[in-house]
Amino acid sequence: MEVLTRVLEDNLNEFSLDEIKQMIVLNHQRLGNEKTDDAGNNSQNIILGLTLELPEETKETQSVLDEFAEALLDTISDSHIVKFEDSLLHDDLARWADEIFTVEMKLRRVLTLIYFHAYQDSDPYELLKDEKEQPMAKDKPDRKQMKTAVDNQFFHLTFSQYVNLNTRPDLKIGDLLKNICNSANYDTLYREINRKPIEDEDDVNFLAGLKERMGAIEKMRNCVAHNRRPSRRVVEDYDNARPLLKKLLDDYLNKWTWRELGEGES
Image (cartoon, rainbow, N blue to C red):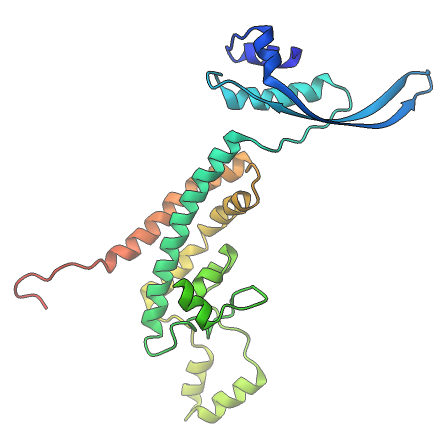
């Protein structure tokens, strides 16, 4: 209570002692081993679970939470604190999750445009057939599953895989021999061996541009997925990278925005 009172006052909050007492709700207590030091002093470890219930009118709530934990560590010797349920963190994670959902869906839309164009006569559920990156799940998504979910293979890639697209797997001996048999001359063989899954210049440039922006998004996405507080560096990098990625996606989509043709256009 003394620590909380001091922290609240430092952040321009004025509450009575009774009000502050009600903010601290003790939930669990588990006693540890008793110890006696060389001077004959007895001590005992205590695992204590509590809930800090701050009123809605509390000013600088995030600062109060952070400073309260720091002050407890400084005040209680040999103390250790772990914070679990945090409504402020929950709100931040929900906001970031919504932003990342929007970005990733737009990215999947762009990738689908690119690969549908490159593989116009191929199976739409096998767009990654020439790619080194494949869905990582042990049970790979099959056609029926993707058709039922109305998605495709891009929905089953991780953020770290997006940046490695347009890379073919290492050529195996059997595939090389097959290419040799199917090639009329050396030039044809050379082109097939060095062929990229995506060859359109604009599409290639877009895929290459992902590498500079996706790392920061992935780090924030991992924090959201695992419900943990991102570091200040992760937040700053994410805030810088997300607008750049959004612009990259919007600029690409704007090239293919549908519009009605005017008179005389074809």
